[in-house]
Length: 156
Image (cartoon, rainbow, N blue to C red):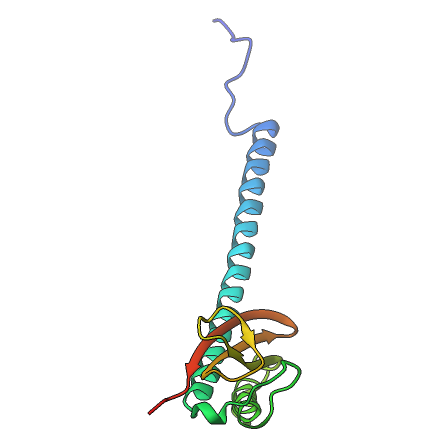
């Protein structure tokens, strides 16, 4: 009877186990990196969507007022009506009511109104019946959205 010089192996060798463990580890690290990136992108998209809602709500509230009620500002502070509208929306988003807490804190809105030339290309010091209203929204000091709108004087 003839005896083979080698035995038939069953199972996996040490090198095969190490290589497969390494491959699985690399795939897992890649998947976790992609998941972390996706989560961060989702959070940023959510913040930008909230900022756009806040900016649109603030701008629409300002534009719903008459031309004469929208005061011209220097950008340093928003007097009168503009300040009241901005404070309302910021307080709403920052959770001034007891129902909203935590994640909404830190929103800041700046608004300004300036006179425009009739061709809409430059800021003026005098009123020609056209105002540019700009609303900028940031959260925790990070600028997220800036929107502008033009309002004209109703010349009946």
